Amino acid sequence: MDEAESISIISIVGKNNSDCGYCHSEDTSFTYGIWAHALSYSDYQSLIDRGWRRRSGHYVYKPDLRKSCCPQYTIRLDAQEFKISKSQRKVLNKFNRFIDGTWDPDTKSENTPQKKPPKPKNDQALTDIIHAAETQDKDYRHKLEPCQIVLEPASYTKEKYDVYCKYQTVVHNDKKEELSTKSFKRFLVESPMKVEKTTNTSVGYGSYHQKYLLDGKLIAMAVLDILPKCVSSVYFLYDPDYSFLGLGKYSALREISLVQDLNQQKGKDDLKWYYMGYYIHSCPKMNYKGQYQPSYLLDPLAYQWFPLAEYQKLLDTRSFVSLARPDKEDADPGVPPGWLDPGSLTREDLKKVLLLVEGGMVAPAVSVTSHTESSKLWKAIKEYVAAVGLQLSERMIIC
Ligand SMILES: [Zn+2]
Image (cartoon, rainbow, N blue to C red; front, side, top):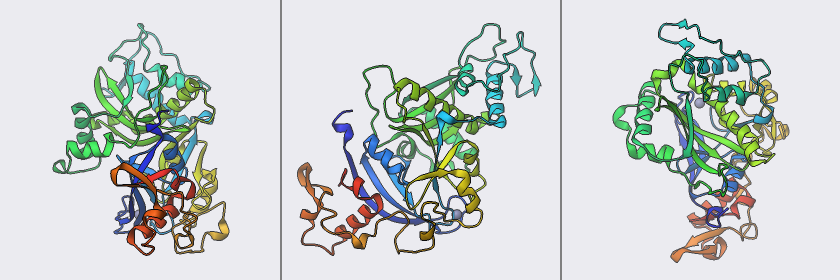
Protein backbone atom coordinates (compact mmCIF):
# COMPACT_ATOMS: atom_id res chain seq x y z
CA MET A 1 0.00 0.00 0.00
CA ASP A 2 1.24 3.49 -0.84
CA GLU A 3 2.01 5.90 1.98
CA ALA A 4 -0.41 8.35 0.40
CA GLU A 5 -3.14 5.77 0.28
CA SER A 6 -2.86 4.95 3.94
CA ILE A 7 -3.90 8.39 5.17
CA SER A 8 -7.46 9.37 5.94
CA ILE A 9 -8.54 13.01 5.93
CA ILE A 10 -12.05 13.92 6.96
CA SER A 11 -14.22 16.92 7.72
CA ILE A 12 -16.86 16.86 10.43
CA VAL A 13 -20.39 17.27 9.11
CA GLY A 14 -22.20 16.41 12.34
CA LYS A 15 -25.72 15.44 13.29
CA ASN A 16 -28.41 15.38 10.70
CA ASN A 17 -32.08 14.53 10.68
CA SER A 18 -34.22 13.95 7.65
CA ASP A 19 -37.35 12.25 6.37
CA CYS A 20 -37.20 8.49 6.47
CA GLY A 21 -36.50 6.93 3.10
CA TYR A 22 -38.11 3.66 4.16
CA CYS A 23 -41.44 4.45 5.86
CA HIS A 24 -41.57 8.06 4.58
CA SER A 25 -42.25 9.59 8.00
CA GLU A 26 -41.18 13.18 8.29
CA ASP A 27 -37.99 14.00 10.14
CA THR A 28 -37.61 10.67 11.88
CA SER A 29 -34.25 9.56 10.51
CA PHE A 30 -31.25 10.56 12.64
CA THR A 31 -27.67 10.24 11.51
CA TYR A 32 -24.20 11.57 12.15
CA GLY A 33 -21.93 12.23 9.19
CA ILE A 34 -18.39 12.97 8.11
CA TRP A 35 -17.08 14.07 4.74
CA ALA A 36 -14.15 11.86 3.77
CA HIS A 37 -11.64 13.61 1.50
CA ALA A 38 -9.42 10.54 1.62
CA LEU A 39 -9.94 7.21 3.35
CA SER A 40 -7.53 4.34 3.76
CA TYR A 41 -9.02 0.93 3.07
CA SER A 42 -8.44 -0.25 6.59
CA ASP A 43 -9.95 2.86 8.16
CA TYR A 44 -13.06 2.42 6.08
CA GLN A 45 -13.17 -1.25 7.04
CA SER A 46 -13.00 -0.16 10.70
CA LEU A 47 -15.73 2.42 10.15
CA ILE A 48 -18.19 -0.03 8.62
CA ASP A 49 -17.43 -2.44 11.44
CA ARG A 50 -18.72 0.30 13.75
CA GLY A 51 -21.95 0.82 11.84
CA TRP A 52 -20.82 3.51 9.40
CA ARG A 53 -21.39 3.45 5.69
CA ARG A 54 -20.46 5.35 2.57
CA ARG A 55 -23.83 6.52 1.35
CA SER A 56 -22.53 8.05 -1.78
CA GLY A 57 -19.37 9.67 -2.98
CA HIS A 58 -17.47 11.10 -0.05
CA TYR A 59 -20.22 11.19 2.54
CA VAL A 60 -19.92 8.59 5.29
CA TYR A 61 -22.58 8.36 7.97
CA LYS A 62 -23.75 6.42 10.99
CA PRO A 63 -27.44 6.10 11.77
CA ASP A 64 -28.78 6.54 15.29
CA LEU A 65 -30.55 3.23 15.77
CA ARG A 66 -32.32 4.22 18.95
CA LYS A 67 -33.91 7.43 17.72
CA SER A 68 -34.67 6.55 14.09
CA CYS A 69 -38.05 5.12 13.12
CA CYS A 70 -36.52 2.41 10.90
CA PRO A 71 -33.24 1.43 12.57
CA GLN A 72 -30.49 0.41 10.15
CA TYR A 73 -28.43 -2.53 11.35
CA THR A 74 -25.20 -3.34 9.54
CA ILE A 75 -25.54 -6.78 7.95
CA ARG A 76 -22.86 -9.02 6.54
CA LEU A 77 -22.77 -12.44 5.02
CA ASP A 78 -20.05 -15.07 5.30
CA ALA A 79 -19.47 -15.71 1.58
CA GLN A 80 -17.26 -18.73 2.24
CA GLU A 81 -20.11 -20.44 4.07
CA PHE A 82 -22.87 -19.20 1.76
CA LYS A 83 -25.71 -21.66 1.26
CA ILE A 84 -27.66 -20.93 -1.87
CA SER A 85 -31.43 -21.35 -1.53
CA LYS A 86 -33.76 -22.92 -4.05
CA SER A 87 -35.21 -19.59 -5.17
CA GLN A 88 -31.74 -18.04 -5.50
CA ARG A 89 -30.68 -20.96 -7.66
CA LYS A 90 -33.72 -20.28 -9.82
CA VAL A 91 -32.63 -16.67 -10.32
CA LEU A 92 -29.23 -17.86 -11.55
CA ASN A 93 -30.65 -20.50 -13.85
CA LYS A 94 -33.11 -18.07 -15.38
CA PHE A 95 -30.33 -15.61 -16.11
CA ASN A 96 -28.11 -18.32 -17.59
CA ARG A 97 -30.95 -19.66 -19.74
CA PHE A 98 -31.64 -16.20 -21.08
CA ILE A 99 -27.99 -15.78 -21.97
CA ASP A 100 -27.65 -19.14 -23.70
CA GLY A 101 -30.88 -18.56 -25.59
CA THR A 102 -32.90 -21.40 -24.10
CA TRP A 103 -35.39 -18.99 -22.54
CA ASP A 104 -37.07 -16.16 -24.38
CA PRO A 105 -39.02 -13.76 -22.15
CA ASP A 106 -40.94 -12.33 -25.16
CA THR A 107 -42.56 -15.55 -26.28
CA LYS A 108 -42.61 -16.92 -22.75
CA SER A 109 -41.75 -20.18 -24.40
CA GLU A 110 -38.87 -22.44 -23.75
CA ASN A 111 -36.75 -22.91 -26.81
CA THR A 112 -35.57 -26.41 -27.16
CA PRO A 113 -31.86 -26.25 -27.02
CA GLN A 114 -29.95 -28.28 -29.58
CA LYS A 115 -28.17 -29.73 -26.68
CA LYS A 116 -29.72 -29.75 -23.26
CA PRO A 117 -27.83 -27.40 -20.98
CA PRO A 118 -26.30 -29.26 -18.09
CA LYS A 119 -28.75 -29.10 -15.24
CA PRO A 120 -27.01 -27.61 -12.24
CA LYS A 121 -26.70 -30.11 -9.47
CA ASN A 122 -27.81 -29.03 -6.07
CA ASP A 123 -24.29 -29.14 -4.77
CA GLN A 124 -22.79 -27.21 -7.67
CA ALA A 125 -20.67 -24.32 -6.42
CA LEU A 126 -22.08 -20.83 -6.74
CA THR A 127 -19.11 -19.60 -8.76
CA ASP A 128 -19.54 -22.41 -11.29
CA ILE A 129 -23.16 -21.49 -11.96
CA ILE A 130 -22.29 -17.78 -12.03
CA HIS A 131 -19.43 -18.19 -14.47
CA ALA A 132 -21.45 -20.45 -16.75
CA ALA A 133 -23.03 -17.29 -18.19
CA GLU A 134 -19.64 -16.12 -19.38
CA THR A 135 -18.42 -19.25 -21.09
CA GLN A 136 -19.30 -20.08 -24.62
CA ASP A 137 -20.44 -23.48 -25.72
CA LYS A 138 -20.79 -23.75 -29.48
CA ASP A 139 -23.55 -26.33 -29.20
CA TYR A 140 -25.92 -23.81 -27.66
CA ARG A 141 -28.29 -21.88 -29.86
CA HIS A 142 -26.86 -18.52 -28.98
CA LYS A 143 -29.08 -15.55 -29.02
CA LEU A 144 -26.56 -13.39 -27.32
CA GLU A 145 -22.88 -13.16 -26.77
CA PRO A 146 -21.99 -14.53 -23.38
CA CYS A 147 -22.66 -11.97 -20.71
CA GLN A 148 -19.56 -9.99 -19.94
CA ILE A 149 -19.03 -8.84 -16.40
CA VAL A 150 -16.38 -6.18 -16.18
CA LEU A 151 -14.90 -4.90 -12.95
CA GLU A 152 -13.23 -1.52 -13.40
CA PRO A 153 -12.23 1.41 -11.18
CA ALA A 154 -15.23 3.72 -10.69
CA SER A 155 -15.33 6.18 -13.58
CA TYR A 156 -17.81 8.28 -15.50
CA THR A 157 -19.11 7.35 -18.94
CA LYS A 158 -22.12 8.62 -20.84
CA GLU A 159 -23.43 5.06 -21.15
CA LYS A 160 -23.42 4.55 -17.38
CA TYR A 161 -25.14 7.87 -16.88
CA ASP A 162 -27.87 6.99 -19.38
CA VAL A 163 -28.67 3.69 -17.65
CA TYR A 164 -28.61 5.49 -14.30
CA CYS A 165 -31.18 8.06 -15.51
CA LYS A 166 -33.42 5.35 -16.89
CA TYR A 167 -33.21 3.40 -13.66
CA GLN A 168 -33.82 6.39 -11.39
CA THR A 169 -36.80 7.69 -13.33
CA VAL A 170 -38.51 4.35 -13.98
CA VAL A 171 -37.72 2.42 -10.81
CA HIS A 172 -37.46 5.26 -8.26
CA ASN A 173 -39.78 7.79 -9.91
CA ASP A 174 -37.12 10.52 -9.80
CA LYS A 175 -37.85 13.54 -11.92
CA LYS A 176 -35.63 13.75 -14.95
CA GLU A 177 -34.83 17.40 -14.39
CA GLU A 178 -33.44 16.56 -10.95
CA LEU A 179 -30.80 14.28 -12.43
CA SER A 180 -27.50 15.56 -13.76
CA THR A 181 -24.10 14.22 -14.69
CA LYS A 182 -22.77 16.21 -11.75
CA SER A 183 -25.05 14.53 -9.22
CA PHE A 184 -24.35 11.13 -10.78
CA LYS A 185 -20.61 11.67 -10.37
CA ARG A 186 -20.98 12.90 -6.81
CA PHE A 187 -23.23 9.98 -5.96
CA LEU A 188 -21.69 6.97 -7.68
CA VAL A 189 -18.34 7.83 -9.24
CA GLU A 190 -16.42 9.88 -6.69
CA SER A 191 -14.89 8.07 -3.76
CA PRO A 192 -12.46 8.87 -0.94
CA MET A 193 -10.65 5.64 -1.79
CA LYS A 194 -8.32 5.33 -4.74
CA VAL A 195 -8.00 1.97 -6.41
CA GLU A 196 -4.93 0.22 -5.08
CA LYS A 197 -2.26 -0.55 -7.65
CA THR A 198 -1.19 -4.14 -7.46
CA THR A 199 1.94 -5.57 -8.97
CA ASN A 200 0.25 -8.75 -10.12
CA THR A 201 -3.09 -9.45 -11.78
CA SER A 202 -5.06 -9.58 -8.55
CA VAL A 203 -7.73 -6.96 -7.93
CA GLY A 204 -6.62 -4.13 -5.64
CA TYR A 205 -8.72 -2.53 -2.90
CA GLY A 206 -10.80 0.52 -3.70
CA SER A 207 -14.04 1.69 -5.31
CA TYR A 208 -15.23 -0.12 -8.43
CA HIS A 209 -17.97 -0.35 -10.99
CA GLN A 210 -19.02 -3.84 -12.00
CA LYS A 211 -20.60 -3.58 -15.44
CA TYR A 212 -23.01 -6.11 -16.93
CA LEU A 213 -22.62 -6.13 -20.70
CA LEU A 214 -24.99 -7.99 -22.97
CA ASP A 215 -23.91 -8.06 -26.59
CA GLY A 216 -21.59 -5.25 -25.60
CA LYS A 217 -24.44 -3.14 -24.25
CA LEU A 218 -24.50 -1.97 -20.64
CA ILE A 219 -27.62 -3.35 -18.94
CA ALA A 220 -26.66 -3.02 -15.27
CA MET A 221 -23.96 -1.79 -12.96
CA ALA A 222 -22.95 -2.39 -9.38
CA VAL A 223 -21.02 0.16 -7.33
CA LEU A 224 -18.71 -1.75 -5.01
CA ASP A 225 -15.98 -1.14 -2.48
CA ILE A 226 -13.35 -3.83 -2.21
CA LEU A 227 -11.81 -3.71 1.26
CA PRO A 228 -9.34 -5.79 3.29
CA LYS A 229 -12.02 -8.06 4.70
CA CYS A 230 -14.97 -7.68 2.37
CA VAL A 231 -16.81 -6.54 -0.69
CA SER A 232 -19.23 -3.80 0.30
CA SER A 233 -22.18 -3.07 -1.93
CA VAL A 234 -22.82 0.66 -2.37
CA TYR A 235 -25.48 0.70 -5.07
CA PHE A 236 -26.92 -1.27 -7.92
CA LEU A 237 -28.72 0.04 -10.97
CA TYR A 238 -30.08 -1.62 -14.09
CA ASP A 239 -31.85 -0.92 -17.33
CA PRO A 240 -35.58 -1.40 -16.48
CA ASP A 241 -36.08 -3.07 -19.89
CA TYR A 242 -34.29 -6.05 -18.32
CA SER A 243 -36.19 -6.13 -15.05
CA PHE A 244 -37.55 -9.57 -16.02
CA LEU A 245 -34.09 -10.95 -15.27
CA GLY A 246 -34.37 -10.24 -11.53
CA LEU A 247 -31.06 -8.40 -11.69
CA GLY A 248 -31.24 -7.03 -8.14
CA LYS A 249 -31.25 -10.55 -6.72
CA TYR A 250 -28.83 -11.79 -9.34
CA SER A 251 -26.30 -9.07 -8.54
CA ALA A 252 -26.15 -10.02 -4.85
CA LEU A 253 -25.27 -13.60 -5.85
CA ARG A 254 -22.74 -12.28 -8.33
CA GLU A 255 -21.13 -10.20 -5.59
CA ILE A 256 -21.03 -13.13 -3.17
CA SER A 257 -19.19 -15.10 -5.83
CA LEU A 258 -16.83 -12.14 -6.29
CA VAL A 259 -15.91 -12.38 -2.61
CA GLN A 260 -15.21 -16.09 -3.09
CA ASP A 261 -13.05 -15.34 -6.13
CA LEU A 262 -11.11 -12.62 -4.27
CA ASN A 263 -10.62 -14.90 -1.30
CA GLN A 264 -8.96 -17.44 -3.58
CA GLN A 265 -7.07 -14.91 -5.63
CA LYS A 266 -5.59 -13.08 -2.68
CA GLY A 267 -5.26 -16.17 -0.52
CA LYS A 268 -6.56 -14.15 2.40
CA ASP A 269 -8.71 -16.11 4.80
CA ASP A 270 -10.24 -13.04 6.41
CA LEU A 271 -11.41 -11.62 3.08
CA LYS A 272 -14.67 -13.50 3.15
CA TRP A 273 -17.45 -11.05 3.99
CA TYR A 274 -20.11 -9.53 1.82
CA TYR A 275 -21.61 -6.34 3.23
CA MET A 276 -25.03 -5.67 1.77
CA GLY A 277 -25.56 -2.34 3.46
CA TYR A 278 -28.14 -1.97 6.16
CA TYR A 279 -30.76 -4.45 7.24
CA ILE A 280 -34.06 -2.78 8.09
CA HIS A 281 -36.32 -5.21 9.86
CA SER A 282 -39.36 -2.95 9.72
CA CYS A 283 -39.15 -2.44 5.98
CA PRO A 284 -40.42 -5.42 3.96
CA LYS A 285 -38.72 -4.08 0.83
CA MET A 286 -35.32 -4.31 2.49
CA ASN A 287 -36.01 -7.55 4.28
CA TYR A 288 -34.78 -9.62 1.33
CA LYS A 289 -31.25 -9.02 2.57
CA GLY A 290 -31.95 -11.50 5.32
CA GLN A 291 -32.50 -14.24 2.76
CA TYR A 292 -28.79 -14.64 2.07
CA GLN A 293 -27.39 -17.01 4.65
CA PRO A 294 -25.46 -17.22 6.92
CA SER A 295 -25.81 -13.53 7.80
CA TYR A 296 -24.84 -11.60 10.89
CA LEU A 297 -25.88 -8.26 12.36
CA LEU A 298 -23.57 -5.81 14.05
CA ASP A 299 -24.53 -5.19 17.65
CA PRO A 300 -25.24 -1.46 17.94
CA LEU A 301 -23.77 -1.12 21.43
CA ALA A 302 -20.85 -3.53 21.52
CA TYR A 303 -19.88 -3.76 17.82
CA GLN A 304 -19.84 -7.56 17.90
CA TRP A 305 -21.55 -9.79 15.36
CA PHE A 306 -24.44 -12.13 16.09
CA PRO A 307 -26.49 -14.37 13.79
CA LEU A 308 -29.27 -12.48 12.05
CA ALA A 309 -31.94 -14.95 13.23
CA GLU A 310 -31.22 -14.14 16.87
CA TYR A 311 -31.93 -10.48 16.22
CA GLN A 312 -34.94 -11.15 14.04
CA LYS A 313 -36.77 -12.90 16.87
CA LEU A 314 -36.34 -9.86 19.09
CA LEU A 315 -36.82 -7.22 16.38
CA ASP A 316 -40.39 -8.48 15.99
CA THR A 317 -41.11 -7.15 19.46
CA ARG A 318 -38.99 -3.98 19.64
CA SER A 319 -36.95 -1.91 17.22
CA PHE A 320 -33.77 -1.40 19.24
CA VAL A 321 -32.00 -4.60 20.19
CA SER A 322 -28.57 -5.25 21.65
CA LEU A 323 -27.70 -8.91 22.10
CA ALA A 324 -24.36 -8.05 23.67
CA ARG A 325 -25.75 -5.63 26.26
CA PRO A 326 -29.47 -6.28 26.70
CA ASP A 327 -29.34 -4.51 30.08
CA LYS A 328 -28.35 -1.30 28.32
CA GLU A 329 -31.09 -1.45 25.68
CA ASP A 330 -33.47 0.87 27.49
CA ALA A 331 -30.95 3.04 29.22
CA ASP A 332 -30.78 6.37 27.46
CA PRO A 333 -27.39 7.85 28.20
CA GLY A 334 -28.26 10.95 26.20
CA VAL A 335 -25.89 10.01 23.39
CA PRO A 336 -26.58 7.83 20.35
CA PRO A 337 -26.01 4.08 20.85
CA GLY A 338 -22.44 2.90 20.39
CA TRP A 339 -21.03 6.36 21.08
CA LEU A 340 -18.66 7.32 23.83
CA ASP A 341 -19.99 10.06 26.06
CA PRO A 342 -18.53 13.29 24.62
CA GLY A 343 -18.85 14.96 28.01
CA SER A 344 -16.54 12.43 29.61
CA LEU A 345 -13.72 12.86 27.10
CA THR A 346 -10.70 14.61 28.57
CA ARG A 347 -7.91 16.53 26.88
CA GLU A 348 -5.71 13.54 27.66
CA ASP A 349 -8.07 11.28 25.69
CA LEU A 350 -7.88 13.58 22.72
CA LYS A 351 -4.19 14.39 22.68
CA LYS A 352 -3.53 12.18 19.64
CA VAL A 353 -6.34 13.65 17.53
CA LEU A 354 -4.77 15.54 14.66
CA LEU A 355 -5.96 18.58 12.80
CA LEU A 356 -4.87 19.80 9.40
CA VAL A 357 -3.88 23.43 9.80
CA GLU A 358 -2.72 26.17 7.49
CA GLY A 359 0.02 25.37 5.03
CA GLY A 360 -0.84 21.69 4.97
CA MET A 361 0.68 21.15 8.42
CA VAL A 362 -0.75 18.73 10.93
CA ALA A 363 -1.07 19.65 14.60
CA PRO A 364 -2.66 18.04 17.66
CA ALA A 365 -6.20 19.33 18.00
CA VAL A 366 -5.61 20.10 21.69
CA SER A 367 -2.80 22.53 20.88
CA VAL A 368 -4.85 24.36 18.30
CA THR A 369 -7.92 24.67 20.45
CA SER A 370 -6.21 25.13 23.83
CA HIS A 371 -7.70 28.55 24.51
CA THR A 372 -11.13 27.73 23.31
CA GLU A 373 -12.43 24.83 25.42
CA SER A 374 -15.98 25.95 24.90
CA SER A 375 -15.59 26.77 21.23
CA LYS A 376 -17.81 25.26 18.58
CA LEU A 377 -14.85 23.47 17.02
CA TRP A 378 -13.80 21.85 20.27
CA LYS A 379 -17.35 20.65 20.90
CA ALA A 380 -17.59 19.31 17.38
CA ILE A 381 -14.28 17.46 17.76
CA LYS A 382 -15.43 15.83 21.01
CA GLU A 383 -18.67 14.74 19.43
CA TYR A 384 -16.81 13.35 16.44
CA VAL A 385 -14.38 11.39 18.63
CA ALA A 386 -17.35 10.04 20.60
CA ALA A 387 -18.93 8.86 17.35
CA VAL A 388 -15.91 7.22 15.68
CA GLY A 389 -14.25 5.97 18.87
CA LEU A 390 -10.77 6.70 20.20
CA GLN A 391 -8.82 4.36 17.92
CA LEU A 392 -10.14 5.74 14.65
CA SER A 393 -9.99 9.31 15.90
CA GLU A 394 -6.23 8.92 16.26
CA ARG A 395 -5.82 7.61 12.71
CA MET A 396 -7.97 10.00 10.70
CA ILE A 397 -6.90 13.62 10.30
CA ILE A 398 -9.54 16.31 10.70
CA CYS A 399 -9.50 19.15 8.21
ZN1 LIG B 1 -38.94 5.05 8.90
